[in-house]
Image (cartoon, rainbow, N blue to C red; front, side):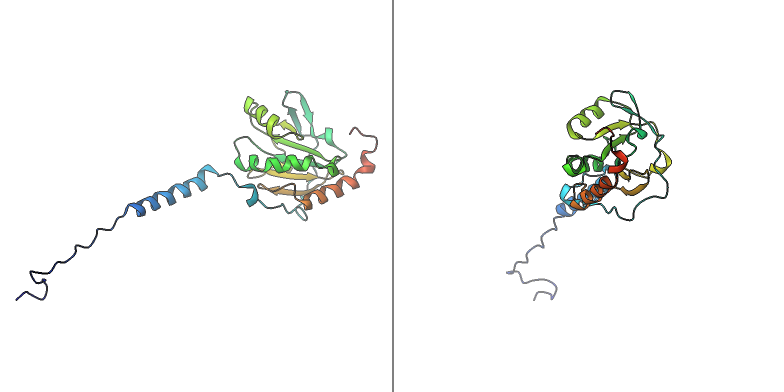
Length: 208
């Protein structure tokens, strides 16, 4: 008589299948890679995932630093004061910054809006001048004035880029945004158009 713990001789007991841990290992590796990707590689943000910036109520207490010395892509000196008397949208960016590159198309579309002819669109990088900067500016930043600087004034200093500042015609920084955004949003167009309209008396007779 077979013992209670053993089957009869004419019975078969299936062997429990071994658990395949392959997918578990794959999952662990995927999670580890994704965490590394988010933390270190700074992934590109899909355009549809970027929201419109909030501009109202984000101004700073310091006036713009019009003494900021810059240079064009040709190496010629430029001053922020060259844009005095009209609204300025100032964007700090770099070629190695994926979010900067992601938001650039929306900035280009914003600069092309006919309602904003009175606004200066200035993009500044502190990178050492290189062919990569010139190529990117020539292909992806049409309509923006692309400049380079050795330093960033205190009023425009931030912990990260992209960083964008809106300067009214009277020199006050009326909005600041750190991080990528969808700049061609109608709310942004209206905000800048209002500033441009208010600046008309101040720039009458000035160069277009």
